[in-house]
Length: 392
Ligand SMILES: Cc1ncc(COP(=O)(O)O)c(C=O)c1O
Image (tube, rainbow, N blue to C red; front, side, top):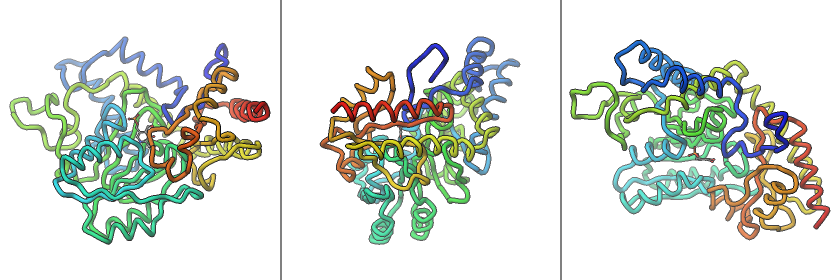
């Protein structure tokens, strides 16, 4: 539950996390009321405070990702913004891209657009519907069959929650000299991992999901030196080198033209501090306990099919269908009769549903607890689905 007077149950953290830790609301509010400054634009003491906040936020996000330094992190407005920035910035005419059917439309659509603009060759490797894992054999085969410039992989599916074997994919990718880009929308702040250990070249994520910041925040990570291969898609004022007609070439300024979302970053900064205090591993365990309990309870209900694979490899997403009912109808009953807020449909990942066979039911119903979800909410959700199933 969100607060003591509110009886709704929010289980849509995969879309955006809610509620956030209190410090996030307080930091965004304080910024708006007491600071209110544009980052990098003022010649006064307040500007120093804003610069300190932005630097602190970069460092904290870099620590969560285990990046080389805060400067490897540039701020965007959401994960989609970051994925567009990276894809459009790094791809060149005639490039070959190997990606997967696990991808979100925020990868599929930019790739489709660039495919016609840049005559790209794009290959989609499928995943196993039982385990939720990418077919690594096919992936390696595709990678080695022709020179490939870029691999783009969804770190964890927003439909099944299953974390992909990035270590294996990374090793195979780098053996061929290709670059590896991760869509970490469902993993940054959700599960502990190191961009350096996994040898990730580029990564985009939302600031408003597992990183627990406000909506309108996102991040990209670009490994040391690789920024030279990424063209800026947005050029303009950066508050630095104003005498030059050219876009700055250094990270992170190269990719941050125009004013940053400072109230959002104030919230993200507080969220990142909270995450580091709690530890990503602890937060993951907390969510995993809830999602495992939920998926096990759902599996016991007649007519329910839960999608995904091994629960331990999940970021905390439970997708299911009920008796072949349209997923939107199930979500509507959960909302209207039980005040449970979840998401139904294709979840912007249409190819996933082709493999899962969930297109006829209009996709899946997705329940996704967050770190502040109460145990009782998960129990109530399972009971609501059981009641609905019994009434059919
Ligand atoms: C896997 C994945 N990629 C990208 C996105 C897009 O994130 P945003 O809404 O921050 O642009 C989402 C959002 O649900 C997602 O789950």
